[in-house]
Length: 223
Image: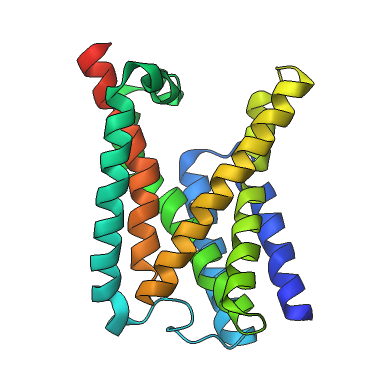
């Protein structure tokens, strides 16, 4: 149990670390080192196999198929939301408006896939879920992993909403935890159904990079 506590504390410390104002190159280097550290801890201390981490090569093809189907459904849903004027503002009012032309390429092709999606999936649906499944049943492990995933997003949300009123901050925080928990449950189910981390990586990529790219397309089409 102590090794699991250390793992959760490590995730909390990482959450604080990645919210610090580092330059992009430094942030990428830190995340690569942290991801390697989590994988090393999972293998050496926790004794998790590549299959328990969702990294087995034999399951990658199945994960690719499951993930591609999930990603296609997610992208289709986002495309509909972006096309509808009433919901389009939720996407185009984000940082897409202020990013430079260079970031418009780097965000969906490099920063989001490696700096966010792969990094988070290795930690949550790889190491944490694998560790919890050693001790708890599937349902409890999925809920616990998704709850921690929801809390993971709080620092950024609190910071961005801090200039608003307390009621707005509370509502934003509650909404973020709920949405990210739901996404975490979906990603965990994809990971377990496919036995591969490839599936949740593709679904997560569709959510984040897909939303960014489609919002950018909406800006160019409709302004």
